[in-house]
Length: 116
Image (cartoon, rainbow, N blue to C red):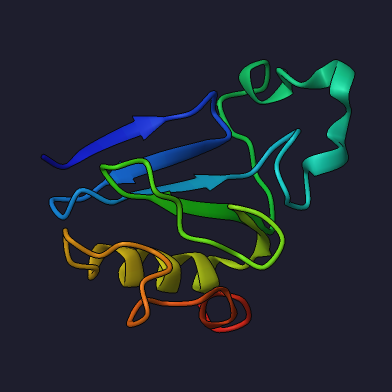
């Protein structure tokens, strides 16, 4: 079942028919241009004029089994441009429902980093 989910006016999640979910986040606490906006202003995206922008965003993805796609240092990859985010979303949307990260024929961390 596909669905959309918004995240505190600083991101969204997309769940695809293949069971994979992509998260795209840009705000305080995320690996992006707006990361260091201020811990004391963590809710700032909710208090604006309805818009919250950033030049970069972090991405992550997991399957219906709760298995996350791995990156070299984390389960998220930060500071992605809009083109990189679009490419990542397209790659995850194209995964098969039975793909499991880390399998010998699976994508490795290095494939995601720098080449999304």
